[in-house]
Structures are given as structure tokens and as C-alpha cells.
Image (tube, rainbow, N blue to C red; front, top):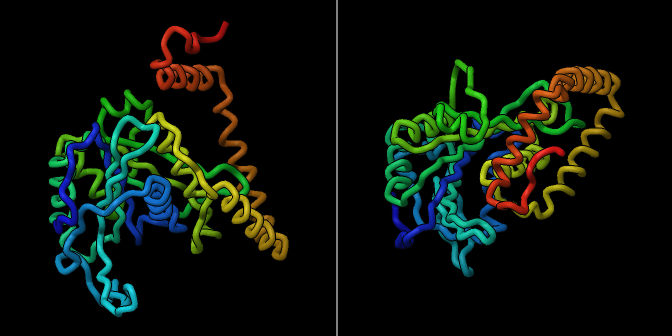
Length: 289
């Protein structure tokens, strides 16, 4: 780890990480971390040595102009610190690229840094292509392998088995290190997953708001999401097969969402709301009348 700044004493910090590559359909996860870096004016505090983890023929260095002088910029994974207004804790943001090799050493470095900083919870962000409609809310799933975390945040355990990326490896490493670990995944329409998807990015930001129980400024994400949806609509209007396919996805999603309107589901959602707002005290909500 290359230390760029001395690490100050932090307030109950959490870590939020996303990586370019296999885990990042529609660039949704990395765009979410980029958004947090921008709105919170996060400052770089450390970086991983790219020589140890990257194939430079895959992730080539870039020549950049810096105050009128040319220099080589080596792409790597950076660690940034955000002192967040309106949130009573600091946030460590990991902005990275999935490594080419030595994944275990890579995750050990990040977890050692997290432990040194006093991080309690690691949030990993990912996005995958799925059979969902761009006209419907982007599904975002939050999972954990810890029973305590599942109960505290009212999450569902993941039942996925199969290949994983650095997001899955890092989430497991956080659990093995004794930290709370939560993975958030956005489902990006596979027919629109090869270009940036601000609607999926907005979905991840909204899920983080829920999990952190704190508002996060959305900036221009809502307008960008609407513009993205309009663009896909225009594409569908020019292709009958695409339009028919989107309609079938809409019908499937609408049908799948119907059980969420049951009384038990509404009661669970209201209980979750009460837990999130419990700190409001006696003047806060007390339940249905």
C-alpha cells in the first residue's frame, strides 16, 4: 500500500468499494463510487502499487498533461477519505480496477488497511446484466453471509453459486477478517448494459441511503437516468422485436412484483421503517392507528 496522506482518527468509518471490469455492468457500480467521491469531495489517502496486481498490456498506463508537463499515469486502485456532511461517520471509498493476478494478496492489503482505519462495515457494489426492463425500477439486491447483518438490516442471504469477481472475493475477505460485509448488486437490462447506466447507479445510491440510514445527494443522477430511459425508448420504437421483448419483460416484472403488496410484506416494510427512524424518539412514528 502506497500511503499518500497520514490517516487521521476516524469517526466509526465504513468502506464502500467498486471495481471496473467483470463486476460492473453499465459502469453502474464504479459510477456510484465516482458520484460519492464528487459530492463528498473525497481526498486520496492511499493507493495500491499497480506493479503488483495489473497486467499493463490490459490496463495500460496513460500519458497525461500535468500543469503543462507530460507524465505517465499508472492506473490502479485508490483509497479515498470522505468526511460526510449529515452523516455521523467517515467513509473510506475504494475506487479500483479488478486485478489481473494475486487476488488474495490484493484483498489482504485492503482488509489490513480497513482494520488499521477502524472500519466496521464493508459495502461492496456490483452490477450485472439481467432480464429486466429499462422502464421499471432497477432491482438492487443487498446480501450478506453474516446472520447478525442479515437480521440487523433485514437482508436476504445470497444463494448464488458460480464464478465470482473481485467484489465477491473482497466481501468474503471482509467477513473472514471479522468485519460486517454487505454486497449490493444492481440488475442492468442486458440489452442496454454495454453503455453507462445512470439509472442503475441511482439505484445503488438509493440502496446505500437505506443501509446507511442517511440521505445522499443525488445531484444530476435523476435527470441522467430519465435521459437514459428516453434513449432506450427511442431505440425500442425503431425495432419491433426490441419493443415486443421489452413488453414481455415488463409483464414478467409486474407479475413478479405483485406478491410484494401482501399484508405481510407491507408489515415488514413498516417495521423496517420504524427501525430506521427509531432514533426520532417519542415524537417519531408509532405505528398505524
